[in-house]
Image 1 (spheres, rainbow, N blue to C red):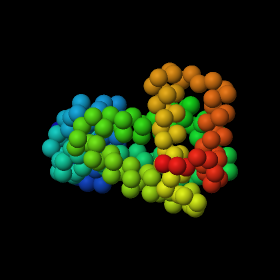
Image 2 (image 1 turned 135 degrees about the vertical axis):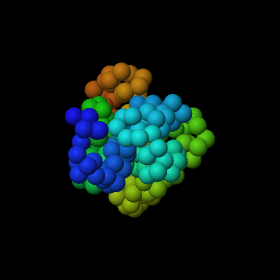
Image 3 (image 1 turned 90 degrees about the horizontal axis):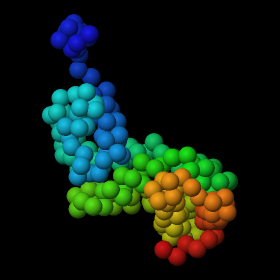
Length: 190
């Protein structure tokens, strides 16, 4: 049934659902394309909304990118997990595509000054600060930076450079290194 065929009561506006559809489309488009390549028309088409609505709901492309990146971090948060066996669990998730979108969005954002500023702010406020709080002392900030570097580097290697291949010995080492950082040890000099 086409939109024109809908009865007036079936065409009620639902700003909450519309905003959620735009945000979900932005997460998908920014996760697949770089900030510079992704257009608001691409996002509105993916969301099935008028091309003017992303700006109406989010203001600017940069604000929509920030919301999409924060949403990606929120839905893929590792800071609510149990600390026991974190390294093994994270290594399995890295191998199985978990959090690949976060790494891809951050990496592609670095190429554009506007999106880089957004990525750095989101990284600091929504990734490093909560991770440091979750880790706790000693040297929570240093350990958070080291753990994030290890996780994002592994994701980049496994899904970008090594095409999914990482030796069992390397995977064991990475899991152990992440676990040592979470447990309060490891090299946290950042």
